[in-house]
Amino acid sequence: MKRLAMILSLTLAGCAAGAPAPGAVRADAPVLRILAEPDANGRRPVAVDVVRVADPALAGRLAGLDAAGWFRDREALSAEAGTRIAIASWEMVPGQSVLLHSLPPFATAPTQTLVYALYGALGAHRQTLDGAGALDVRLGRESFTVAPLTEGTP
Image (cartoon, rainbow, N blue to C red; front, side, top):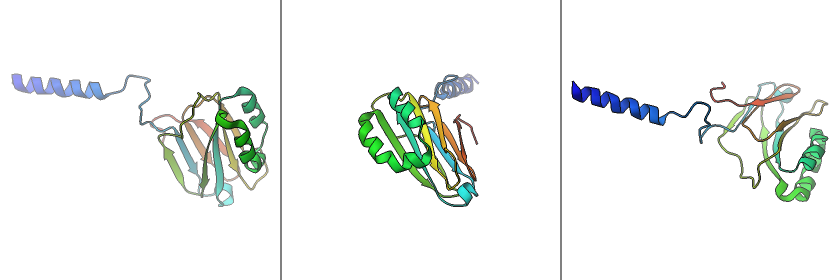
C-alpha cells in the first residue's frame, strides 16, 4: 500500500510539473491560423500577407494602403523598409486552412501587424493590430476578419 501511495504521488507530481502556469503561453502554441471558408473570394484563391512592422511611421503609412495598393507596391515598400518590416505570404484556396507555430524571425519587436487579403470585391481588405500576438484570420466570401488566436480556439 505504501508503494502504491508513492507511485501515485510521483505520478501526480509529474503531471503538475508538465502543466503550464495559468496564463503562460506554450512554446509550441500556434501563432497564426488562416481559414478560408468554402466560398471565400467567390470560390477563387486569396493572396494573404501578414506584415509585421517595427517602425510606427512606416506602420502608419502602410495602414493607409488598401490590399490592392499593398500587393502592387509590396516589393518596393519591402526594399525601402529593409529590416523594419517582415512579410509572410500565402495563396489560400477556398476550404483550405493553415496553422503555424512560428513565423519567420524578425530582428525587432513589431509595433504593429497588418493583414492584407487580395479579394476580387471592392474594399480595403486590410486589418491592423497592435503588436505581434497570435492571429486567427478568417477569409469569407467578400471580406475577412482577424481576431486574437487563443489556445483551444476551434
